[in-house]
Length: 345
Image (tube, rainbow, N blue to C red; front, side, top):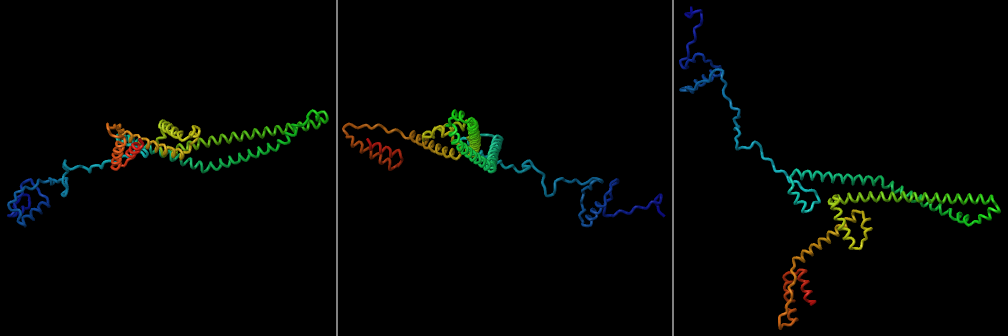
């Protein structure tokens, strides 16, 4: 019979090696198992570390075991590589390229974009022109040939009417009217018919000539626009009317020096001939600029002073020797010219 009141079972005797748990403190099975394992291994002797309170979760660090928290010294991301420089449009000269480097990147991007759009437009127009010529040009040439043949046929027909018209024109109309009135009426009607036919033929010939002249003028304008597009594609400065006018004035003056007339210069619309003339003009201008620069760098020869008592021949000989020595050291055109000038004196 139990000594405990209300029939409660007596509590088990505590283990002599384990300290009793304080009142109000409970442990989980995991913590109890860990404590028993330490006791069996002898690691619990003298361990005064308090167990965590019930219901408290062990503190955990958000940083992984192999990771370290970021510091202010470490950058968040790799530095961006510097943007590549924007190249100026093709065809710009040295001065324009220097100005290009002073522009902000946004302005450079806009200029490049607009230049690409203009180049694309020129290319598209060139392709359209080529397609137009491929389809329409043969038809236009055939129509032009037909008009020429038609005009020639009309002229032959008009010429065939002239002998009979001249014969009737020389008729004595008064005599025929008096002798044979019926014949007079027939011949008069025939003569009037020949005159009307001749006038109609002449009118048709003039109409064909007018159409041919209009077609030739239109073809010339199309060729002029096409040549200008080709010229702008290779020489962008011609897209600016002011620059085109300035270059055209210089080119006209250059060609007049070779005997070309104003009408010949104006009628030249082939971009290939224009580019050839421009190349010759620019080469001539470069040669003139180099010659002018050399003339400015070369000092004028000092006036020759003949010493009293010395002969002119001796002076010239000494001068020639000096000039020859100078030419041996620097065989330039200027030194050679000085020798020739001294020799001609």
